[in-house]
Image (tube, rainbow, N blue to C red; front, side):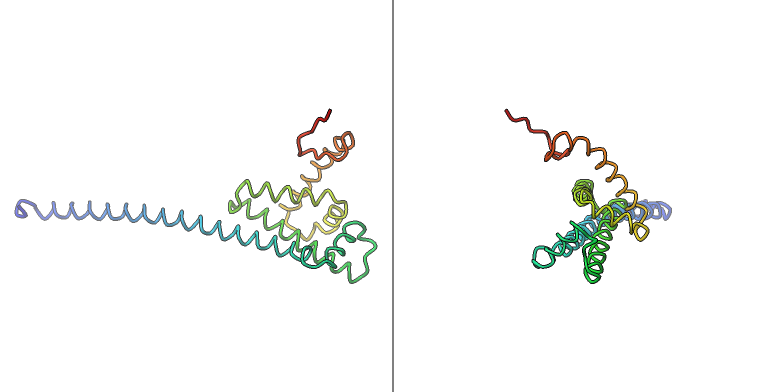
Amino acid sequence: MLSQFTLQDLGSLGEFVGALGVVISLIYLARQMSQNTTSIRAASFNSMTENSIRILEHAFRDGSFAEFLHCAEQDPASLSANEQVRWNAYMTAVYRHFGNLVYQYRVGVLDRQMWLSYRETLKRHLRTPSWRSWFEQNKAYFSSSLVDLVAEVVRELEAEEPARQIAPGVSPSEPSRVTS
């Protein structure tokens, strides 16, 4: 039976088998890349979560830091020189973290659901006047993407102000509750 095949036929068969091998290899490689992308996203998300916890950890582990943070948020002008340094370092770390989250979302590493959660956290912080004013005074040190996001969130908060004045204590992001 082999004698019926010409050398050209065997060459064509070899090309076909080779092309089939290339296609199978490409499919395998695409699958591996997809799994790798998922792994990278999961590792990146884990890193973002760890960073969030590290920032928050001081407030829930150290009562004196929690007290300092409360005082700093209420009246940053009353802080001593050492406390001002501490406040600036803390706020820089927090806003750098949010800047990183903006970047991670923009490049597709952070999914929309988690992004919206982090964005709401930033919005909650920006309801505190000291957070707004600190960022406004220091925005030159942050990415334009973060500056744009903070400006957008502040506009949203300003638009919500009339609703807050009408119904104090009700967050505009929460559904209204009618009581009888």
